[in-house]
Image (cartoon, rainbow over all chains, first blue to last red; front, side, top):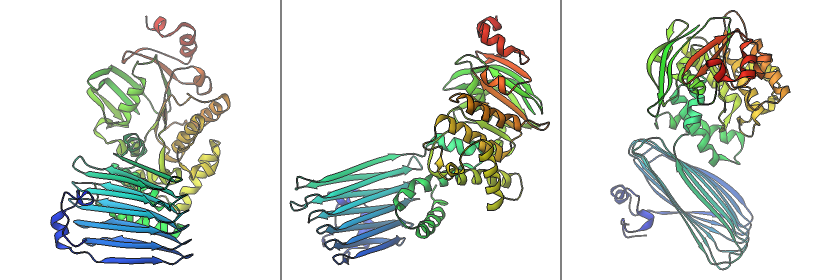
Length: 242
Length: 246
């Protein structure tokens, strides 16, 4: 990863390459979860730039990663996750793009040992002419029998000019695995919006409430206090997203 | 309370309401009956201000103000409530959060103080109990996993917390078994009072046995073609809409 990427490279197709050039090259940040240990992190990415995390989860280890990605012209988070025997990776990511921002999440989850589980939930909202992208690869090695992997991406576009890209990719060399993936891009439900306004909720507030509810899928499983904190942050971010 | 004068409205370029005139005074309950496609639901959506329903002529005055000039949430704050035929499910938003947000948004728009957490909970508990909706259901996402009857009860819970001046209830009786119909009818009746009015939109006279209206109107092809007292419901049930309209 030393030569500056070009548009021809699939993983960089939707990037803001001028911004990428300003932040190139990228230092890889190692994250190691030792065998049998449980770790969790929250990444709040709001400064321009690219982060590349190489995450290794040892046998029987578990890692929960929550990402709240928003608030600058260009931001990219790349995750390279390696799961050993019986390891567990849970990721919930929220991408909020507004103005002309480009927000990208690129993950490669490698199941290199048997019995490992991974679950990725990504929820994105794009307003203005913003672009939010999720490129998610799950790679199951020949040794990755009994892998249970899933990824789910859903995006809401708040404006006609906004964009969401989804690129799920499965690469499986073992024969006894479960890999589920789903992607959907839509708009705010007009029936729900009318229902809320007909009860007296102003449209902007109704949109924010509906959008926050949609994004909250990615916070599933977090404790109540953390969820409340993050929901408050999301609400503040959404107030300026439309 | 409500004065509708020669109202015409269209959806997708198709004219549905063709000169509808109706006056509802404070303290009264009116029922609008009519066949499928007559414009009953269109009337309720036009009153609530749903996008896509375009008013092409006439006027609607609500408590002395031009209703059609207001946005949907402003109509609600002015005291209009629309009970939907098919209440919407909203995943991820609890009934309590939804209702509290609505109540306080209305109060703010009217220049009143917001309800405190304790005050709101008291109102919501009382309303849920009155309408026979287990309070635990109020903590769940709006209408999600609710049966048809539970959704209608939930509409009535919302109405009781919001205390509108005029309730327009579109087919609130559909999907209800006899017991639920009785509970919902009691809920509607308990809102009756000298300052309030109700406009029931229904297919069947069944509801009108429990909520006895002061006036019944027959809506056909976008117009009120006949009006009468409570006894008209049984006549309609026996003879059909066409015979009455003729």
